[in-house]
Image: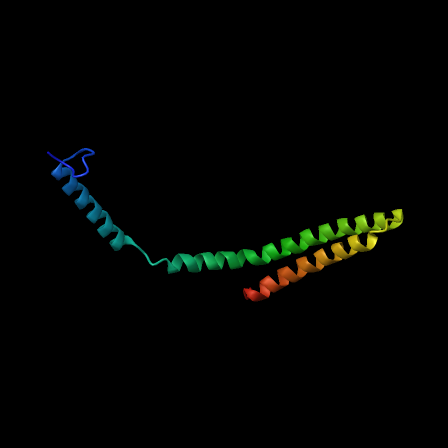
Length: 112
């Protein structure tokens, strides 16, 4: 056994040689069995595209529910005579339009 130059611990030359061989075998095995990943990316692309229509419909449904809740909120404020009814109505209408536009733009952007 001989000491390392940094004097932290003793090094066995047979162990170093066996570790080097092990690392070389692992690198060799990885190169032999590695795949390029294109098939996996294409499969993921197809799965995401197949779920997109259902996600868009879910977004429209959530938007409809929130729109109804917002309409009730605006109606209550209007009947109560609150002065900020116009701001609430504009925010409600803007959020509904935004939700529909985002779903449509994403759908057309990704070509689904």
